[in-house]
Image 1: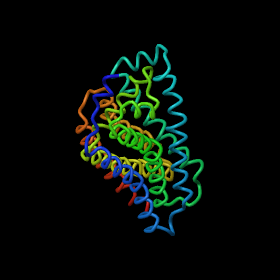
Image 2 (image 1 turned 120 degrees about the vertical axis):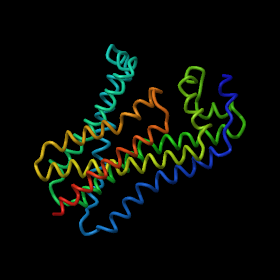
Image 3 (image 1 turned 180 degrees about the horizontal axis):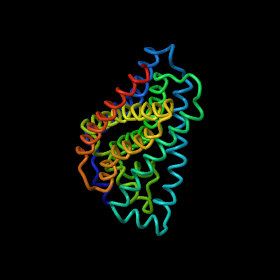
Image 4 (image 1 turned 180 degrees about the vertical axis):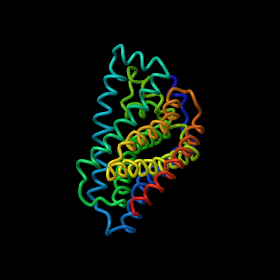
Length: 272
C-alpha cells in the first residue's frame, strides 16, 4: 500500500487537531452558559434537551434512513442520484431542509407547549446546533487526531494495524488519512468559523419556526426550509468537487447574516 507509506503528517496536524477538538466542545458549551446565565428565569433546560433530541431523531435517524435507501444502498435511485451532480445537490438540500425544519416544527408545536418564551426558542436552537457538533463533527475530528498521532510515529504498518486498515478497506480509509495528514491551523480556523455560523443558523431557523408556531402563520415553516436549503447548497456542491472550500465559507457567512437579520426582527416582534 504505497499510498500510505508516502503519507507525511504535517508538523501542525496534531496540535491543530487537539485545539479543534477542544474548541468543538467549547463552542456549544459557551453558547449554552452565556444564554442560560443571561436568561435563567426565562429558560428551561428541557428546551435544550428537546433541541438535541429533535436533531438526533430528525437528522440522524429519519433522514439517515432515507439516505440509506437513496444514497448508500445499490439501486436505480441511488445510482441516478450519485451519478448526477444536480440530482445529488437537490436531493441533499431538500432532505436536510425538510427533515430538520419539519422536525423543529413538530417539536415546537406539539411537544413543547409549556414555557413558550423567545429565550427558550434560542435555547432549543443551541441544543440542536450543539448536539450536531458533538455527534457529527467532533467524532470525525477525533478520528483524524488518532490517525495523525499514529502515523506521526513513523511506523506505517503499526498505524494501519491499529486502525484496522487492510487491503480491502484501504481505498475507503485513504481519504481520511490524507485529510488528517493535511489538517493545519487554516483548516482549524475554517472548521471553527463554520461551526459558529452553523450555531447561529440553527438558532435563527428555530426562532423563525417558533414565530410561525406561536402566531399560527404557516408561511414560516416553508421559509425556514427554503433558507436551510439555500444555506446547504454550496456545501453540497463542495462534496461533488464543484466549488472550492473558501466559497462554501463565504456562502455560509452571507446566508447566516440574512437569517440572523430576519431572526432579529422576529425576535423583537415576539417580545412586542
